[in-house]
Image 1 (cartoon, rainbow, N blue to C red):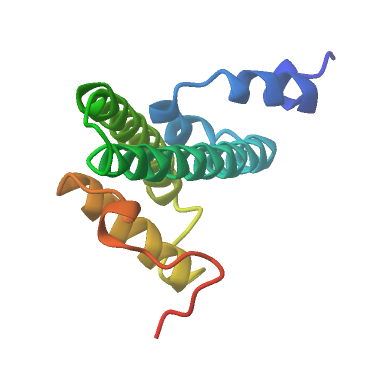
Image 2 (spheres, rainbow, N blue to C red):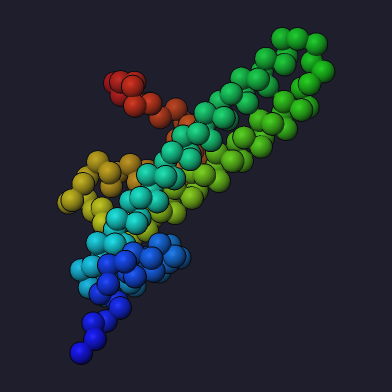
Length: 150
């Protein structure tokens, strides 16, 4: 009897890597191997999305600073600086949306729950609400990793 390819870790990992994000909930229930691969892949995507958002937020801050600095000089480049600022803001918002889509999948699949990790659950839920309201963490002033919360 030949083993099922659905139990081959290499095949499963490749299939999971190519799953659309909305399909994770259906497929992680196939067996424990699929569950572990889906969970690992979503967390990998989440880490990458956090890094992309962080870079986009930094670019947005630089673009805003450059925009406001144009008012100190001869103001020739105000329109160009404004366009750069808008482009950076759109990139930041898009990268945040992609991160929140992954967080929603993690919550939908039950990989993070109130019981398993309350802190992570609250952050993800808060990010989802921020996005619904049209904001990003950078817009409301989340403290950075090296800042105190209180």
